[in-house]
Picture 1 (cartoon, rainbow, N blue to C red):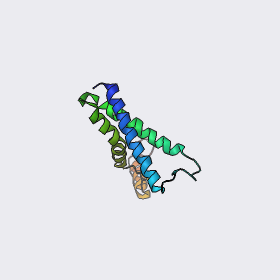
Picture 2 (picture 1 turned 30 degrees about the horizontal axis):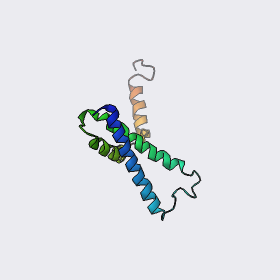
Picture 3 (picture 1 turned 90 degrees about the vertical axis):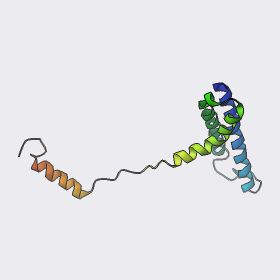
Picture 4 (picture 1 turned 180 degrees about the horizontal axis):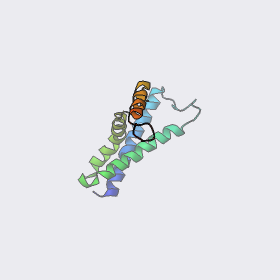
Length: 122
């Protein structure tokens, strides 16, 4: 399987996953367009679906050398958006805590005992 072939099958898999997501959203909205009444309209949803399609193509194209047919690439395209979303969701991001005032005072005292801030011995 070539790079472009795997990428194409991955795009189709991503498209299948996006169409399924649109179908589920329409069903959840009681068979009405789910973007009706939203101030931004349809564009945010279409952007998310398009990202899923492109992501499916990219992931499948990256694994092209291990594929013998289009079926694995298609399946990778279907699974890629949720796999990547779950993998990114496992990354924990937290703010760095500021040092406690006691620690700052201890560092200042240590610097003063060693000769002050200018580096000269005490």
